[in-house]
Length: 168
Image 1 (cartoon, rainbow, N blue to C red):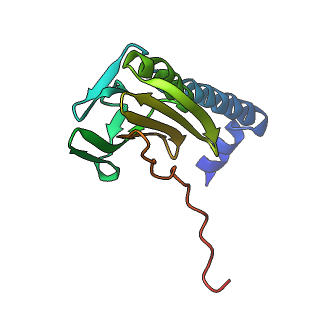
Image 2: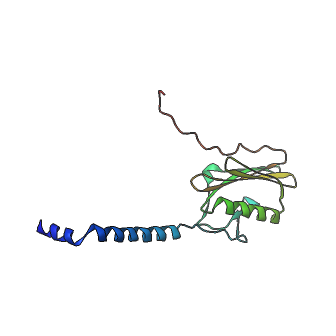
């Protein structure tokens, strides 16, 4: 008990509170300074072998192919593909990447829109249409769909509605 009393006399609120506040601010500054994510190098492009004429931002650690949400069908020279990627890059960086890179791969921009936080591009090339959707869903997602010209894309991703308790 005496030890506790001696320690409590040494730690006075008039000294301890400012010291704790300074330490908390330093910790916050260090934490915020390290939160900036990776940046896309606009000249760094990955090419998926199944979809060679559509660019994907480079970075094996920052761009992951989501095979469970993707499919590829090729028959008689027509492609019907949906590839989904998850990335640590910011949505505005990914949007800028596709604005620059798709024309470099021979695609022509036909339409661009932003609805409910989903940035969508529609590109055409020869007899195909490519839809690129970029949205934030616990990380930036990129959905690329290539269809024969005139084909309709699958509906845009929809965020699930909050669940309600049963019986209400």
